[in-house]
Length: 277
Image 1 (cartoon, rainbow, N blue to C red):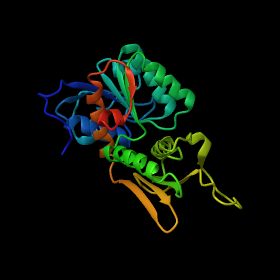
Image 2: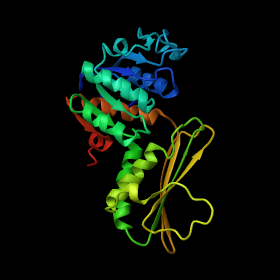
Image 3: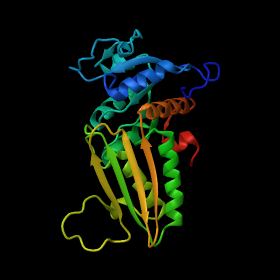
């Protein structure tokens, strides 16, 4: 069952999908097709992709009338909002055209540098953007639980974040793991840049209790597992989220699309979408 209201409760949203030939692109296209209040209006992929020129919904055995194209203006000309789960450089190129055309953006891409994040914030002065490292409703509720746990366990507990993803993921730690670290550090009044530890090897000495450790596992087809360990004396608390399907990311993205329907400018995240502020 899809998480979408009937077409009578919200206006139809015309959506373009970046990376339309990929696994996440397929999941998004399927979710848009099933949502009564959404319509596929554009499909983008890089030049040279084998999907270029084909119908975006052909993998479903369905004809949408929307071809996959590499030209950004062609792919975005009929869209109100772009959903983008690609790579940082590609997302920024897409965003520049969105800004020019007045197309909103839902960004699930991870791995942005601070300078690239600043570019996105600048674009949000002209269009509405929802950006989050993980669109899953469950993951974002987990962020809130971590904020609460960090405040309650602020002393006497060592904090470690362990994440696992499929062999094709190109960035580490995952954007979700980093967001978990940022949420925890913020709750503790720290800056993640100053307290994160990303690698341990050899004789490292005793653990600094003020640090937040990260471990990344890559293998197989793991969609995404994240565990935060609060290890104290005589006990440990583990808060875990496991994704079994990318469908959760797609449904979260559509919730973001609906949230942006009433916004014209600004940079938002899933806490805004879900009312978790």
